[in-house]
Length: 390
Image (tube, rainbow, N blue to C red; front, top):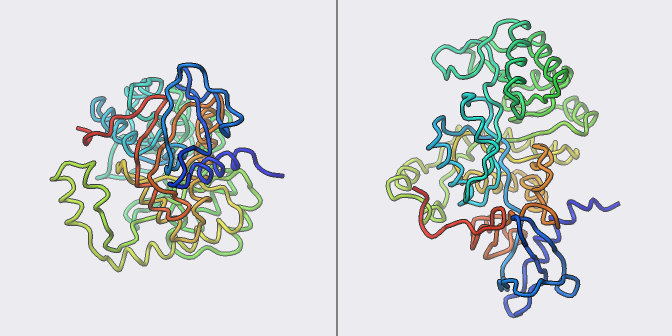
């Protein structure tokens, strides 16, 4: 049986790529009132209201806006708004900030400021004591403290619970199975899901046994084994956000020049070098992603950090790891929307929010075409892309 949501993504990307010699569009979309898509389909099947503005997208490709399920955003209100405007500029409709947010910013989740991406947050994540690192997360040392932290997070109605299970290169103790098991149990009792930052293969297995809902990273210490693949297969709703590392190779950054101040672009270029150690790290994680993708694991998109253009880099990295372009687009749109429980985003369907990107070329022909953005429509309104976001 055909999955209708996958078909909606597939159809909008493929059929939206109109031959440049033709003057008619393969699809009509009526965004209507309230920033939602009223109708979508072939021209012959869609009745366009009298007086509606028609936009000729001949030669263009239309795809849903991207949803980033792993970021770390700024911690002041003005800076956060800028982060969200930048994401809209690059075609990202939603960003989930994972574990480094103070509670006073959580009220911004319900705000729909013009030209800004939607903001979701895990609030304060949970980890063992990590002296010298950011102090916003809950630093705990027992199962009881873990349960208390979850109680606090639930009171603030966070969107998900974030935990870190990592020694940071043997610098710190990491959450034990007893502690993270208690956190997961308490979160589930309170109707919350848990996503985990991991590094080691054995921790991934332990977390699956404990009932983890999602991984905010893939396994990074070694190539995964058949046991882990089998464990994923036994949990079809378990989410993997691969969050691939930098590939460690010098790349063409020219596509970023128009959207960045000159000094910021210069800094990126200065760091744009070949790095063999990073290449090794990417190789491990790319192979692991390829194995889990081949096994049918449900994959979403996440970028970590605060690079608003990062999803386009991650999309390319996921394809280079072995995923098909359409698989990556579905991961970045439909799968990510479903993971974040956003019912009105992720696909181009009637009744959903009018969030889409108009591309100058088809990403199914070359995945880097997601960077060739002609226009961004967010909640039915065009995002201002005339100049870099200040």
